[in-house]
Length: 388
Ligand SMILES: NC(=O)c1ccc[n+]([C@@H]2O[C@H](COP(=O)([O-])OP(=O)(O)OC[C@H]3O[C@@H](n4cnc5c(N)ncnc54)[C@H](O)[C@@H]3O)[C@@H](O)[C@H]2O)c1
Image (tube, rainbow, N blue to C red; front, side, top):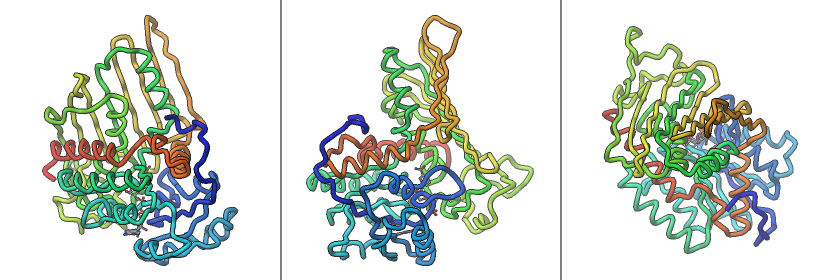
C-alpha cells in the first residue's frame, strides 16, 4: 500500500517516542541528510520521552540543544537514560515506539537483543540498517522469533531502507513495470566520502560488518526491490584490502585521525574497494562496485538499468540534485526526471508513524524479514570478495 494513502487512524493520540542512540542518524551531523528527530518534529503528533545512550554527556548535549530550539515543547518530558531496559519501567511514559540508531555490533542478535526485548515489551520498533553483524545463519532464528512475536502482538517493525520511499525509486519501479520486459542488467555503484567519516566502528569490519554490509547495503536492497531475488550461489567478488604502504593501491591518504585505524587488527580493516557480480533468479545480471574513495562530504551512488529498448540511470539519490535519465522505445532522446523536494527519510518516518497509528504493517516497505534477505545478500558479497 502507498504510504500516502489516507487511512482512518486507530489512534490519534500523541505517540511517545524514544531514541536509542544519540548519534548522527537520529540527530543529524555533517556527513549526510539523515536525521530522524528533525523529521519526527516536522511530522508532529509525537512527544519524545527518552534518549538512550551510554555516552550520557553526548545525549545530554543533544537534549540541551533541542530544549533551546523551536520544538522544545516536544522534549519537555524527555529523559536521558544509559540503558534501553530503563525504558521498559517508565510507567505511563513508556514509549510506544523506539528508533534504534546505534552501531551495528550493538544489536541484532541473541547476544545484543535490544529489538527483541522491545517487541516482547510491546514497543513498536524502527531500526537502522544493517540489521546485524553476525553470520546470517545465526541471525535467522532471531529474525524469525522477533517477526513472529511482532505479528502476534500487532506491533510494527520497520527497517530503515529509506530509498524504498524515494520518489525516484517509485518512478523507476513504475517504468520497469510499464516496460513489461525482463531487465538485462542492473549495475550499481556507491562511492563514499571517507575523509570525514569519523565513526570508529565504521572502520572495523567486526563492528560495522564492513562497507558492503553497512553502506552498500542500501544499493543491495534496491537491486532486490527493483530486480527480484539474487541467486547467491553464482555470486563472485573481488576486493582491494587496506594497506599502510603509500605506494600500494589499498592505501588511503585521509583517514580521520580520530579513527586511529592502526589500532584495528589488519584483518579487520575495511576493504577499500569491493566488486561483485551475480545473476538474479530470473536471469538478469547484476554488478556492484563500492569504493572508499572520495574526500570532503558528498557521496556518489548510481543505479544503471538496461533492457531491450530501455535504459534507466539514477544519479545522486541522496541529494536534491537527484536525476533519473530514461531512454525508452524507438528514440535517441532521453527524458530527464528531477526530484528536488524528495525526502525519503521523511517518507519512511511518516510511513512508520502511520503504520503504528493504524496497526497496518502494509505501509512499511522494508519489514524485518525482508531486510534479512538484503542482509544475506550483503554478507554473500562480503564473503565472496574478501577473506573476512
Ligand atoms: N539510513 C541511513 O541513511 C543511515 C545514515 C547514517 C547512519 N545509519 C545507521 O545508523 C546506525 C548508527 O549510525 P550513526 O551514524 O548514528 O552512529 P553514531 O556513532 O553517530 O551514533 C551511535 C550512537 O549510539 C550510541 N550507542 C552505542 N551503543 C548503544 C546502546 N547499546 N544503547 C544506546 N546507544 C548506544 C553511541 O554511544 C553513539 O552515540 C548505523 O547502523 C548506521 O548504519 C543509517
